[in-house]
Amino acid sequence: MKKDGGAMHRARSFDHLKGLDGISDSQLAEHLDLYAGYVKQVNALTQELSEMRSERRASGKDFGLAEGTRRLAFEYDGMVLHEFYFSNLKPGGAARPSDRQAFGRALAETFGSVDHWQENFQAMGGMRGVGWVILFQDPITDRLTNHWVSLHQDGIPARCKPLLVMDVWEHAFVRDYKVTERFKYVAAFFRNIDCPVVDQRFNEEPGLRSPSAVRGDHTSISSR
Image (tube, rainbow, N blue to C red):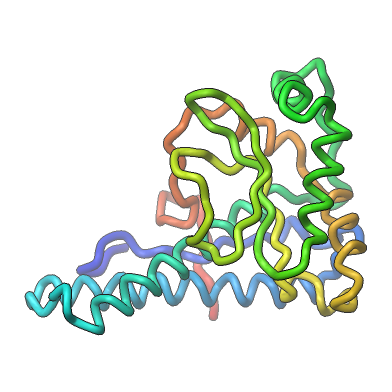
């Protein structure tokens, strides 16, 4: 399925996430609806910018090009980060990484222990402001680092790949918790982490792509 702008994106279905511990199905449905909006905007902006190029209207001084290009970076990263976020969750979660696993040993080497890593990650989740907390791996050095990302496209370390992504924008939890109760949401997030997925990301070769791009039958068409 293509238009002039190239491969279109489809909002993925995350039906397997129903029944999360501490994150209600209604909160999840609202969050998925917001994610579908990012997918829709990515497709619209990609097509719009493609038309500019084909009609040779694009210019460095063109306001439409500048605004569309900047918005595409925000919408695209918002789409992809949400896919990482939903994909690293499952109802009830799974056992945390141990020092018997390469991922657990890497956490211990960087942070002193898995517990110390978790404490740091959760502490960052409680910082003032809205954004994302993301555990990244540098594929060259294998070093793991926790990062705060305010806007989707700002603050992501170049070359690094995301291993664990936590959305701490208020839209991720305000149906279930008060704004002042973000710590409860962060605790719920940790109860639902699909650790085998995070471990798989750790062991994957670099070169990640957005899983929302149309590839065979691995995606579902959003009805929105």
